[in-house]
Image (cartoon, rainbow, N blue to C red; front, side):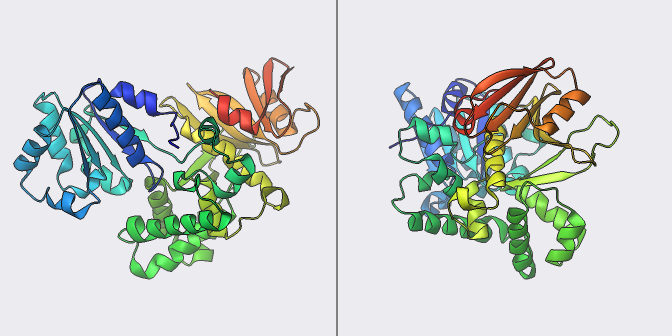
Length: 395
């Protein structure tokens, strides 16, 4: 069964605009499937399409020609041209620029996995000529909307990688996740990390999984992994550039004892984190249940970010804390994640935040059982369940 992605209708609308569309994201999150769905949509609209999968050796070999010949090949092949894993082409930014600037009526839609490689291709020459869309693992609501029997507890254990939704057994899901993690290290990372540091890099990945949702110290990671702080920062950059790990920073308006330079990290998928930890036990029996649920909320927020939005967290030196501060047009929306709560009691950290920022008009408490609205001072407090948050939340 085809799972309809939330982003598909926006991408369909983009086909009528001239800019080159670039889909970016980790391996196996469904970029190729989206390209195929868009190709089908374009054909139904009467367009002549062509699809180049550059991970196929024979297709890539066909592009082993001069830039002018590649421009002619792309320009004469269809009205809408789809190029999967386009980073394998040398000089691709110059080629795209030449096609775009020639005002040819050709729409190009492409995808890539390694952002570090892609940014070498899409340099300043492509400014104003392309739009980038980040593709993430499946949201839980996307799976539920497709009527697939994949319950929340299962999602929290195995995550949202599309290849898992039809796997029949837990053992099969774990095997798929192991292969995905291995392919990331072998394909995307091996060329970016010194051979002698691969083991240290793997150790860093494990530590990030173990300390997910906690504030991290580069110097502590450096001491434990055995690499310099400079190397740790470099590897954190690589993880972010390849869309595998995200850093968020503390929110502060320079008030009193607020932490100003702290950082938390989250891996891009719950299943990948559990694979790194080698722990797929039931969530309710795990000591890190709170972090798992917190990550579930973070991943929903991350996938819905628009250019005027940013995710931060709030913490004070004397223990005040709110899990996430979603900034939209610089206005903060505090979001607190709680597991089991029996009443609409507003968390103390949220109260403290609202006392410091009394102009905040809306806040959320994501939890397992309560779906109601109340007010605190001048703020609307939305108690919302995890399933409903995944389905309905819009900032």
